[in-house]
Amino acid sequence: MVSAEGEAKFWLEPELQLAQSWRYNRAQLKEIEWLIEEHHHELVSAWQRYFGS
Picture 1 (cartoon, rainbow, N blue to C red):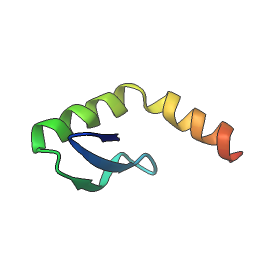
Picture 2 (cartoon, rainbow, N blue to C red; picture 1 turned 90 degrees about the horizontal axis):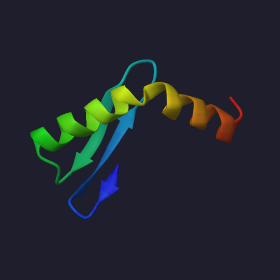
Picture 3 (spheres, one colour; picture 1 turned 180 degrees about the vertical axis):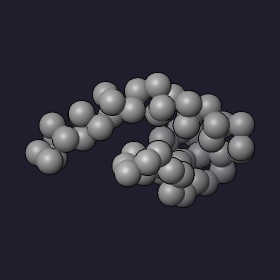
Picture 4 (cartoon, rainbow, N blue to C red; picture 1 turned 30 degrees about the vertical axis):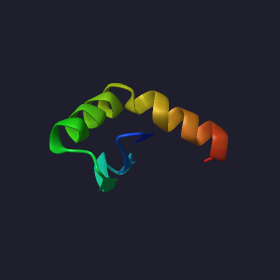
């Protein structure tokens, strides 16, 4: 996730985990994590289609 407010990188597998973040506060990171959880299947499916794995 990248925005004017900051940047965050999450691992999707084997489980959702924050890898790195810059300038996001804890509340923002929890909101981003919630969004990823809500769309986890879509994100993993898109990754697999794009990278062919």
